Amino acid sequence: MKMVGRFFIPLLLLSVTACGQQSSAPANTNSQQPETPAANAPAPAPEEKKLTIGIAQFVEHPALDAAREGFIAQMAKNGYEQDKQVVFDHKSAQASMDTAISIAQKFETDKVDLILAIATPTAQAAVQTSKEIPIVFTAVTDPVEAGLVKAMEKPEGNVTGTSDMNPVEEQLKLIKEINPNAASVGIIYSSGEVNSKVQVDAAKAVADKVGLTIREAAVSSATEVKQAAESMIGKVDAFYVPTDNLVVSSIAAVLSVGEDQKIPVIAGEENSVKSGAIATYGIDYTKLGAQTADMATKILKGEAKPGDMPVEMQAEMKLVINKKAAEKMGVTLPQSMLDRAGEVFEQ
Image (cartoon, rainbow, N blue to C red; front, top):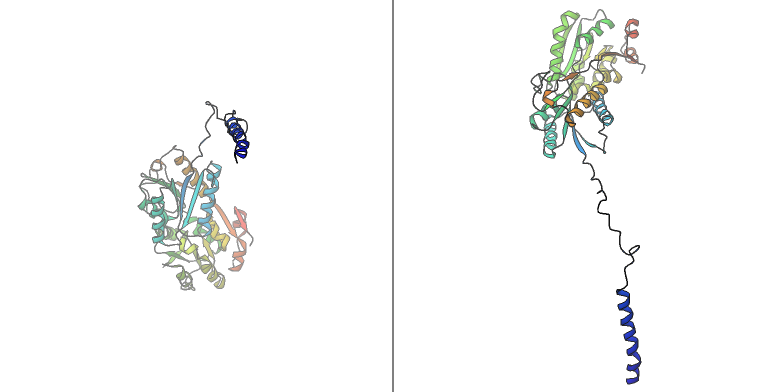
């Protein structure tokens, strides 16, 4: 046993000595340890914080959808691209004022950087809820009557935007141009929308001048639209559909009555003509949305305050015609009308 012990002792000492030499060797800085950054090396740039724009839309229909899409596209051109510099939080109220208020409250809680309110009811909900967050609206017929702004030239507060007030007199004149013998026009509108009553009143104000009698029917839900149109059969020579969110979202009901009874339908905006109305003289909602985006850009860049920015209207109006719709309603369009149209749909 002693010999065995004497045999292993030198090996143990050799092992200890080798370990000591390995631990005291200089470190390989090329592979075992990361390089230490130079003291004067620039720090990595922090990721830029994205802005959030809350988009409150009262209901989905082509005109309001076009305004939203025009806004988002123009914001990208202005340097605010989706998921890069900005996040768009789009919510629809589905034609419910209670939902519109809930959406506005959510945007207020989330402290979004700006609110885009599309249509009068959502704009009213936003203005009632948010007093600090900048608000821009679009597709609002009469922002003063709706209680959104103090005046068109100087809105005051935290709100401004664009109006879609349509040229009602010029649109009603289209009815007389299509049918010089027309004597009465039926207007179906939502009893809950201020913007709709404004247009009905505008139609009444020019009715005598145009040579038409106005017959109106107020509805409170989309299910009442067709019944209202049917109630006017035999009493009107044409239908006029204003930029009423509830009625436009259910315009197919009015069009079906117009086609079945050969009653021409004239609309307050272009997308309703695309959907099947005969004609309109009015605005382009895509361009209106883009115009609103330019206003929002100035606000976000600190170049202007909402309350100091006049409410804007679209300067360019154009005549839009749907020839196929005219055929379905038994209307022969005057060539003079076709010649001056800015756009003619064939289907």
